[in-house]
Image 1: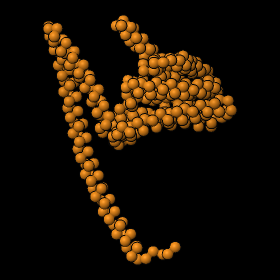
Image 2: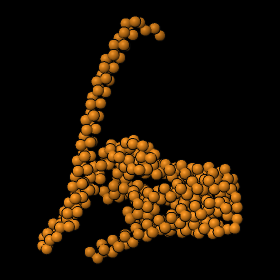
Image 3: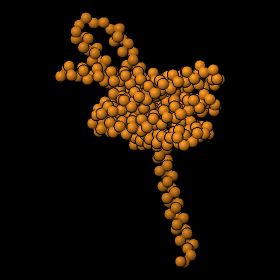
Length: 339
């Protein structure tokens, strides 16, 4: 192979120079468009804010408005319905606009903008979140099984509990980002992971001793069962969501959750017995820990501080599930009456 000559090197340099100028021009246009995009984002956000404020004022005025005419009542109801529809539209718009982080995200990430501006990016992040939950659930099943049946070691238990703390902390951050991007998970299913983070952190600090050993096997068996149920939930709920999205009945950013929601009613409700069994196991864990706290040799503060989160888990999961089932049955009865 012959060595390159000087004229060859000069021609290559000239080609690189030309390409360099094209890159500079492309980057200049990119920055110009980015500045225009930022201005449009600010204009849209301000316009939506002003419109929502005026709608809120109008709603208050309509509540105070009194009319004796039947036609007037119909008009008020129609305006209320239109206002609610417009609020849903604004929610969709805001999911594509930068917004201030909530308190939790501000504490963790600061004022970093976490809004994903394209549908593809949102879906990719949501799917990655779902896969993260699935893979970690499988790892937790294996680790809890090893700790329960193969290794009776406080070090192994600490590794398991540390993984739980990291997992739930990560879930709370990822869920907050998803909510900022239009996911409608809310209420107890969000608070649930904060309580789980606290519980796992307390279990991590619980020193080895008589009280710990008396509760250890029960806790690991429960963790293994809980991860197994979450594994079932993922596959069942993801199938439900796929069908409902295809029919246009669910939002594309809706997530699988560790509980029962109304949209899961379609098809089999086989998950309910598993969920209720796990919830009463949480109550049993709380009762066991409260009894251990009364043990004459109990000196660890972790005993009562683990019992409280288990009780909160049971109350939140059980009554939220009952409320969803009641609402769904009530809606079904109303639909049957109208037919």
